[in-house]
Image: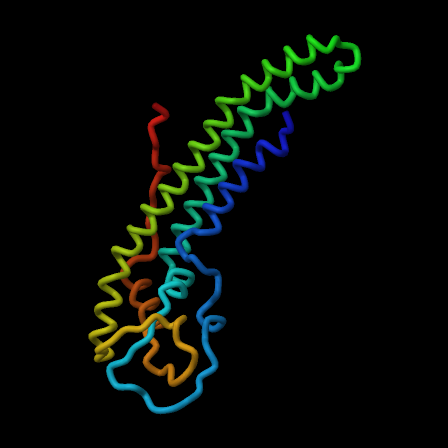
Length: 200
């Protein structure tokens, strides 16, 4: 009946959800740059880092903040439901030396049964937060795709390459910063609630 261990299961799962939020990366544009090897601009060949766009665009930051708020609320909900069980665990430990083995086992089993629905709810909330993150990412992607297309046409591109796959060269046709500016001009925030998954 270790409170820290059980809560860690939820918080670790929740952290993994949070750590894979919209950006998928925490590097800023400058940190994502590769030392150029120079050379000529390849006409029509353009580069883009979606990760850097999603790490820097205002709408992504707003969505990440909203996800963090929803995650905190879910954590607080689980912690509140755990609290009375934890108090009973502390009481049982303090009385353990004076109890018969059968009584200790009976009470421990009863507490374990009380904990099961709380653990199940923690798992449910984690899955709901993950689903919420996926839907928020899709919402941001829906705004992003036409911006990429606009910048692609404006820069007269004929081929778009993921910037992280390029080892070096002339990066003057990197669309990333322009796409961030375009996305910021189109939308700066979104709001959403936690998705609900049926417990049935």
